[in-house]
Length: 347
Image 1 (cartoon, rainbow, N blue to C red):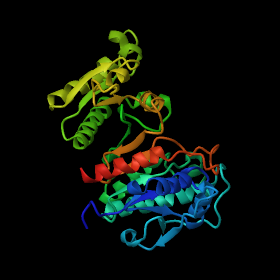
Image 2: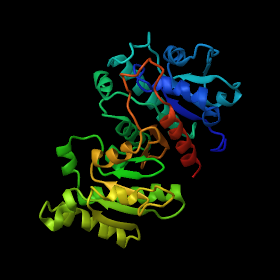
Image 3: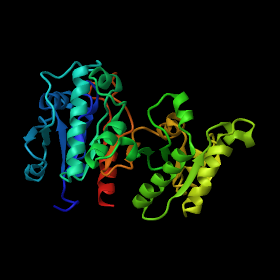
Image 4: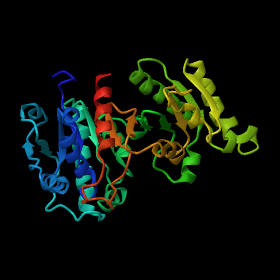
């Protein structure tokens, strides 16, 4: 089966959060985008979600159970294909941290990751999971990225450290790739090493370049205020980041920086019909890179995992327990994640 015809899996996320609802909304409101997609999840949970978003005068949105991904193309329109990748005795209460929900969410991600690694599906799009629920279930990973990294490493017979991955958050105006992901800030500073920065530059160059069809222009943020001010405010730029940038340039990468982190994102932003100065910004830690992208609007933001032997995207928001069950959560970021996954799977 060609990549264009291969189905895509959407994992349901935490059953107590908004993931199942926004999936149901995406199938209802964006049928062209969800064509060829199916949900890796739990039947009772998805049926509850369809009820939560149902309008008073609207027909029920049916859920069709499938046994394999290939059956997606055999179904009629106006239904949600679901493959039972996990099983909950009953859907957990909305908005409550639950070990059962954490385990079910992880089950779905593992199923979809293995299907992608086998080549059964073109990509996976992951609805939000809850880190505390994962921990309560005994899942020893802080999020999707690390769990997928472990699955890819096991599939290829390597240690996780031998499958380096990075998080990229992107919208129409800005892309940023992180040197470190889900670690405490003190650990994130320690993670700013020559090897990690250079590896991030290489991964961003390869992945973003493949998506753009040309070498990307990479801007590098400093770690310290004013990018260290020549060593007055910290020496990481001089001793770590600049040497990594110089090696990357010698390898032919289009890299500039490090620049002051409080201005580089403005320089990179594409807005008002004008291109930004950079195609992607390398951020030294999680919040440095994610705050600017999310400030521009979580409805358009997409999380992309780089470095994996599979395509994975996700909406740029969490489980939103305060909205769960209300039917008010927006599916815009999920729909954009589906579009990006489809593009990447064909690039």
